[in-house]
Length: 137
Image 1: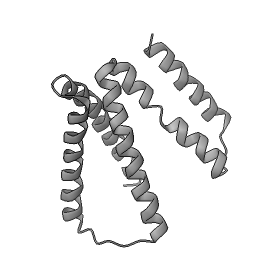
Image 2 (image 1 turned 60 degrees about the vertical axis):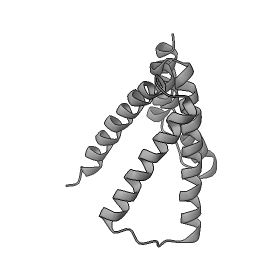
Image 3 (image 1 turned 90 degrees about the vertical axis):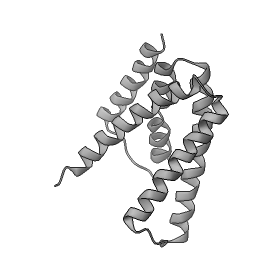
């Protein structure tokens, strides 16, 4: 199936939507620190089960491993800030604003990887920023 990426994209979108919803519910009963620790336990469970199911065997170039580990460090650090924000703010605003993280990736990619943005993509960035203004009002 050539469009399997689309199915994976919708699955990620659905699961991230559930993640934001359940994160807010969790912080109704737990401190932000406790919630993020339990969240991390859930993440580890999924990774261990996936590694076993997929027959993971360590391999790869050291630089790739370094970048993957660094990615995990940034994601885990962001999760701490996310839980602190969602504990104190409205979930619709916090989740929507943090969902703009691709704008950071976009900026870094154009600056360091020399990726070029089209006019349509720049318009999308503008609309995304406009959406945040509307959602946070």
